[in-house]
Image (cartoon, rainbow, N blue to C red):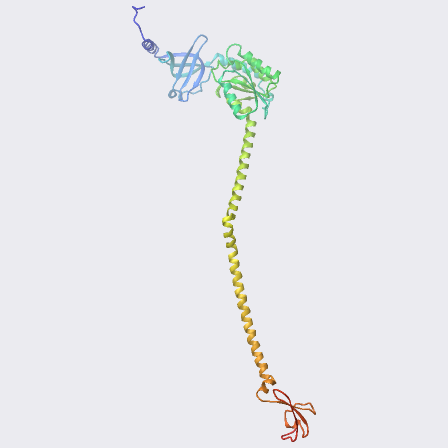
Length: 403
């Protein structure tokens, strides 16, 4: 061994790369499409296989634009390209330049034939479909206990349906014997009434990986189930015959979990939304009441009271002054009228005349006040009343004209 020259792994891989890429610079290969995986970069990664072997392949997005069909697992394809070695992994693959349909693949043809036969038996009829329960108390999951699909389902159910019982019915999801166990788990769930709704599925994979869910025994078990079944096999682009027999087909396991928990989640969201609206409305009313009461705090109350009272006090004072002025004017007017009346009365009073030296003479015989000489005759007794006292007199002579 020491006489043989030593090579590093990189040197050996480089020699292999040169041999393969130079020796197979242009090849045409026919095989069945499997494990088709469109990448986010736009490239298409897949495998070509036949009964005895499988080879990886890639077609870059600039070449994909020329395709007139959408590649799907199970198609029989003819591709032209060159071999390429990927040194970090020590693997080789075909870099495809052209791709065309070469017929139907064996698996795809078998599935189409089985699909038609089962459809003829009525297993896919819409009349057999059952509605999903609105509020399931127990949700059954038939899937691999170690698969990522189960974890996705559990995470979604835990987030959306807290408190709902989840029954996991473990089953292998690929390989020999997987279909029998999957069908048995569905039958056990019905026999023991373990759930109100069943999710049957797995994560994505190649067409061969998904074959157990297209086996007739699984399709018949799903069609015969009294419990509503949601099929959740692979990703959205994947399919299996159990999708047609199930009551509802979900594009992914996570989407299946959302479907069976929809009513719980919607009702919970509605209640939470109503509670938030109620709290917001109450808080708004409290804030409005607080704003209305703010001007009536102890500091501003006296000021606001004075602001309301002051104009009325001013009007009251003005009215009082106006009333006083009016009454004073009226009193003055009455006083002047009274003084004028007094003056007139005093001017016409006999006493005022008497104060000027006049007296009133009365004929005691006739009782008549003597105003002229003819009102008395000689010998008549007269009563003379000056301002003070009384004088008695007897008429001796009368001079002047008589009436």
